[in-house]
Length: 104
Image (cartoon, rainbow, N blue to C red; front, side, top):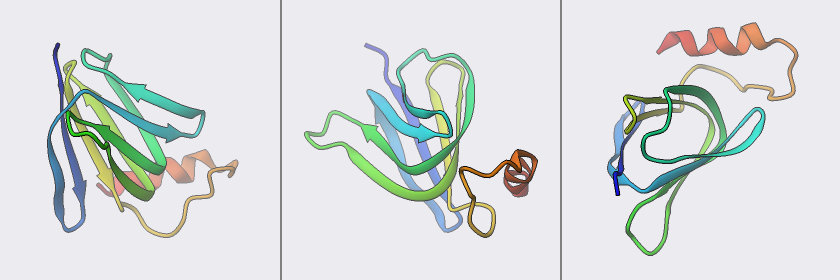
């Protein structure tokens, strides 16, 4: 089976880089999973991202917010701890939330 190549970036550097069977996360519409050969996909992240590797226990990375970019079928880049201030997930000011991520 194909695997994902996942890289998790913070302001301080890369905190995870390796292969995974799947990812689980939460965005503004709810829970989602990313499997190998996923379509190109960009989404915001809230609460945590879970990386499912071959290890007996998945790797869970808590976060306030982040950005996930899936591309080329199996390449996943995740950026956590980006932007400034707190995002209000229930906010009606979506344009402000999107502009926060333009500081990447």
